[in-house]
Image (cartoon, rainbow, N blue to C red; front, side):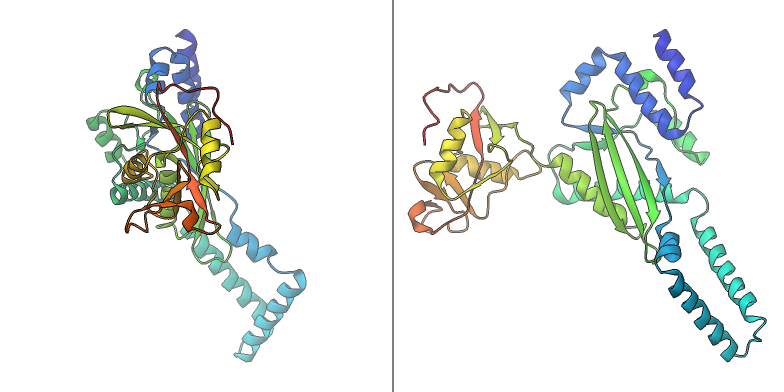
Length: 351
C-alpha cells in the first residue's frame, strides 16, 4: 500500500490522460476483490466519465499548403493579383491586399479553433449519441456505461466551478473497468468537419479503436453506434437460458456464423465441435432475443437443421421447415449450440 500511495502522489501532477492510465494501474495493484468484481462483470464496460481528446494535425491547413504543387499555387496567386488589378487596385497595392486577406482568414481560423471547447463537445456528443442508440434498441442489459466515482454533491460542486472530473482516490476505482480517450483533426476540404478517433482501453489490456468523419455536433453519433455494436452484439461463445436449461452458443468453426450449401456439412462441423445444430424452437427463441440481448437474428435467409432440412423463416406456408431438395445451390447459415453439461460422444464427427 505504501507503493500505491507513492505512485498516486507521483501521478498527481501529470497530464490528464497519464493520470487516468495511472489510476487504472493503481486499481490493478489493489488485486483481490477488485479482480473478482471485474471477472464477475467482464461482459460490461464501466468507463471513466471524462474523455480527453487530443488535437492532431490540422488536415485542412495541410491540404491547403500541400494539396497543390508550387506551380499551381503560383498560378492561383497570379490570377488573384490580376483580378485585384482589374477591379481597380493599384499594382503596387495588390500584393499587400492579398496578404491582408490571407491574414484575416488565418485570424478567423485561429478564433474558431482556440480554447478547449472541442473536447467537451465531442465528449458530450458521444455520451448523448450512445444513450440515444440504447434508447432505440432497448437491450435488456446495458454493457457500456460511464462510471460515476463521486457523490452527486461533489459532482455539482465540480460543475459549478466549470471543471471536469479529474483525480480520484484509489479506493474509489473498484467499479472502473476501462478508459476512453481520443484525437481529432480538422478534415481536408476545409468545410468544417472533423476526423475523430476514439480509443477504448479496458482493464484486462484490450484496446478498441473507432474512427469517423463528420461535423463536430454529429460525428460522434457514428462512433457511438460502432461502440454499441462492438460491445452489445452477441459474442461467441456465450450462454442463454432456454426452457430452464443453459444453452451455450458456440458459433461455427473459425467464424461467428457459418455459411455452407449443405445442412449435412453444417451438422458435421458442429459434431466436430462436440455440439449440434439448433432446433427450430431454439432458432426462433434466439431470434426473438435478437443480436443485442445474447441471441442471433434468424428471420431472413436459410438456416441449417438436422436430417437434411433447413428453416426458411420467409417461407412460413405451409411450414418454414423445408427439405434441402427444394433449393438449388442455396446459401445456408448456421451456428452450433449445446446444453451446458450435455454429454458428448467421441464417435461423432463423421461426414
